[in-house]
Image 1 (cartoon, rainbow over the protein chains, first blue to last red):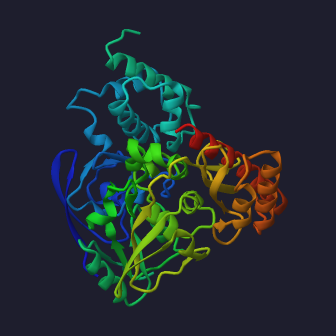
Image 2: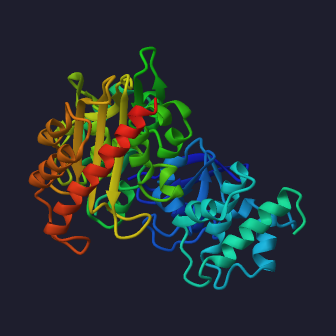
Image 3: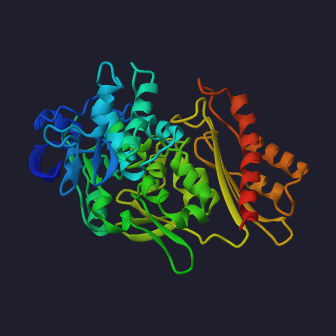
Length: 160
Length: 290
């Protein structure tokens, strides 16, 4: 069967690709567009390693069909830094060692940014619930939660 | 494993024609949180997938002039949760919907998908049933509306005919003195499948007595149940201990659950009664606070 020709926007840039119905948005990002920052952990929407923004909503790219993205706006981890300048979340995750193996990290960063974009001062409970769909088997989560809290404080202009 | 045709029609009529003309199994794509998992794990092998999200009606959540709501079948949980009106009017429906999965899942998870997937443990379904919601179904022969409880006929099976799909839901105006609640039990605090779910909607009269009620249980039978005896047990009462005991007993009597790693038959049955008591109490508190 003919592949679908999809025109979409990824990290603000117009992008075109071909995909089959069985290819997820994650498959397209990684295998067709070489945007390998989004990771495949479970491929069933449980782990959050493939978290991306789709029309401003946090979603798992493994649960979106590539063909569905026609005319939509996709934001991935590759769009998070501005040139060489890391997003504060990225910098503070590094500074505070909020990662070990790093497979879950892009998903955590995309999800945490989505949280801070709508709530600049989340409580620890709010952070933990918001990030409950992102699984990390290394850190035990505490460093991740504290890094999000410190980032939020810094972005609010509070020295900590 | 066959190649899958993918279509994203812009109108209800086109969608029905595509579904009716499918050569093999045809599936609806709303939020995709069940569909893509089933596709990948080869539980289903459809010839056609129809994405209904390009149809405006499926993506619209509207409060109507009479205070009722029309909820598009593909509206995502996160979208509804951000709406002050429906959250205030029907907190039980919203809390049931909101319990489904993580933030990422909430970005996509729809009522149409949760009902159409026909899992006996679907969290939103008992709350929808208790609230008196109707499913607005379109098909090649036109449109019809049926109570939500008439959609699922068994695990993974629905009463929809070939060519039909759920376009939207009707949610009544919240009655004066009305309140609703949904509770579920899972073995952990987040993101698991209900061992038991219970939705209760009721209306209190001026004296604080239950004027009408609807009780629905999930995950204790092949489909979500309407428990008429449970509603009868509390109507006319002030939810005193005797009424609560009768509600509990009626819910337990209605259960015919499976026995699995999440809970034995005995445990699920017992929990159904407990959740019904608690949900009724919360619904009454909400009814009284308005």
